[in-house]
Image (cartoon, rainbow, N blue to C red; front, side, top):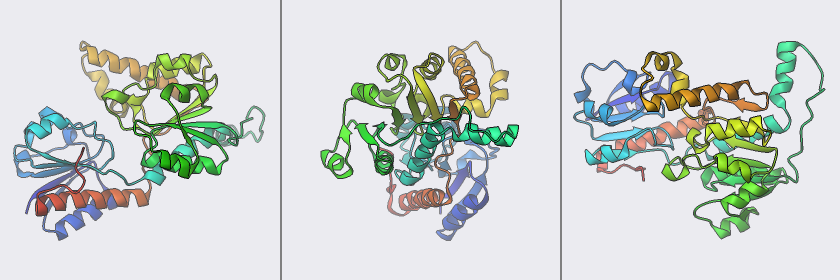
Length: 341
């Protein structure tokens, strides 16, 4: 049977997936780090690799695995994989299309509540300052406010249901509107521009792709309501970091709840980044975004979490089961159960 390399996985998750694969006849090696940081003596022995979003599966990495037949990612997003090059090498590709619709939606609502009621500031005041006072912590009700949902897919629909439970007015922008869904859940589809103009809170739930790159940008600052709250649990580059910083500094944006950021990889290894040459133009761009991220960290009306929206036991079980299904299906039937579109 095939040999599988599992990357960026440890603890009970590694034990669980390895035991399932070995029971199905696979040979399995565990690597806790990203693919490009893992110590691998012989790349050629792997017919399949399973990765997470921190691994950059580019041409250079793919070429090292000379006998690779399958790449699976334990995520819904797949922008960390060079899909075109992998397909040119006839490598099959699998992903996890759904695992945490409610999980991520719950987290997004948590960010909204954290900002609307200044929960973090209140907790920090007591824990760090020992001050039991609500002065300066006035928030606002969600009831009656307009929530703009960008991407009314699996996650977006759960957010809509939750927001309706708070008696919010919900509008949504989606490339493929479904009128029957709007009628069922009680929301209205609008254009992206109208969503920007009408929303008190905007939450992003779209795939990252060229067409969604910097979907929220400096031009959007001229259209949004003054004091709008921005929530992003999708992908960092959906929002232009410079636009977000400018909007916050000018008071156009009232606050932001971010579980994802541009250049997350740099944030995870800043020392390694600084050791590299800054001659390349792309590195200069990374440096600018890195500095902007650190500005966001210091802003009192910004809450940043470390790409944690997916992180529940139940969601991770669904991810691992789907990854197993992708690997076993490919080697048993010649087809990935959930191929990357």
